Length: 227
Ligand SMILES: Nc1ncnc2c1ncn2[C@@H]1O[C@H](COP(=O)(O)OP(=O)(O)O)[C@@H](O)[C@H]1O
Ligand SMILES: [Mg+2]
Image (tube, rainbow, N blue to C red; front, side):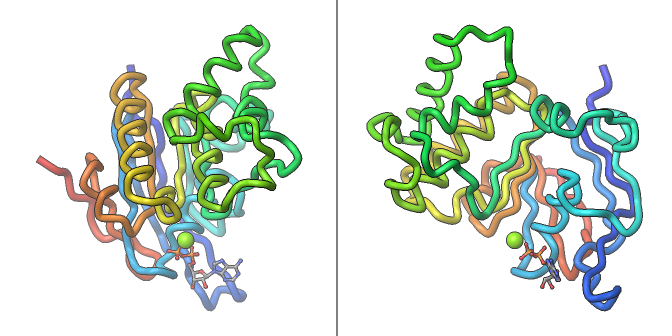
């Protein structure tokens, strides 16, 4: 089996008519079964890179392959996103008028083969992982920003995507919850042979990463493998 889940070559994204090279000829290879920490100062291009990888932002140059597949060969992006990619954004996008549990379950609504009771059990277990079991029936609009962020994390993992793109996932939570989230991510990657790319400033995230990807001024310097 090919262990490469994502291959990025010479990816560039410029803003302000080319004056701001947010992402500048970035190349990366991500393998299955690993956690990668994308680290670098604010404004160095981490969010833009994640958005380009998730095809939420156009590219100005370069190429991307998802488990060998080119973006042009993906016929339905909504379907591909549902099955292959999970996102944790810096700003959560929960549906305010659904409960936290319903928000997490919404990620499973297309999994026709999963019985309803299993969807419910899976989303409840995920909410417990992020310390929200007692708030699962509250509406998203009635919980705190940090709680919404945690529910968004649970939702990102609900349909067991191959590649999760997480933008500062622990930036907004207390250290106990942060530790729970990181434990969950470690187990997810190990047990299910999945991959997570985390943009972060958090030293605790760097500590659990298999590889650190240092970014500066839109470029990646060198990928250092941990021993
Ligand atoms: N939509 C946009 N329009 C113009 N400039 C942008 C836009 N998004 C990001 N940038 C610029 O691109 C650079 C990288 O930003 P970003 O990817 O958000 O960095 P990071 O996530 O590392 O803080 C910054 O200079 C930022 O101001
Ligand atoms: Mg950012």
